[in-house]
Length: 121
Image (cartoon, rainbow, N blue to C red; front, top):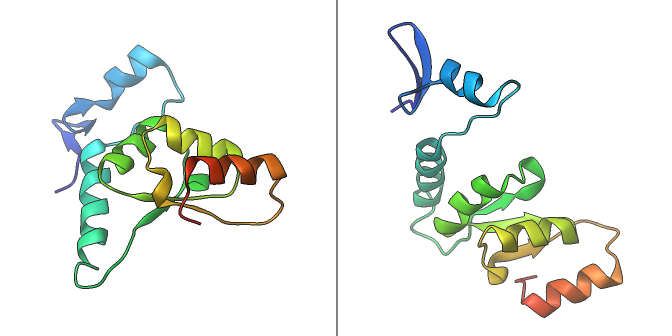
């Protein structure tokens, strides 16, 4: 199923006309489909159902709190590279035990905070 589709010549996201969203919020406007995020996460996660795994979303790709919240509720883990990304994951309801703190150049305070909240690694 495609949650972005034309209905009577109008592009819609989950049956909501995008032109109406643009009128209400102005442009540029970023529009995400919760249904699409959920479907794609589940498809990816289920592909590994036969083996122990944790799907981790790279927060640097999109740190929108609503997107992170949808993924957290689905059980996603998160790949972060900064203390700021850690705080966004926590604010969105992400489980600290499913957070992987990767990358270089960490400040001592970032490492201390990550350990304090109980990240995975």
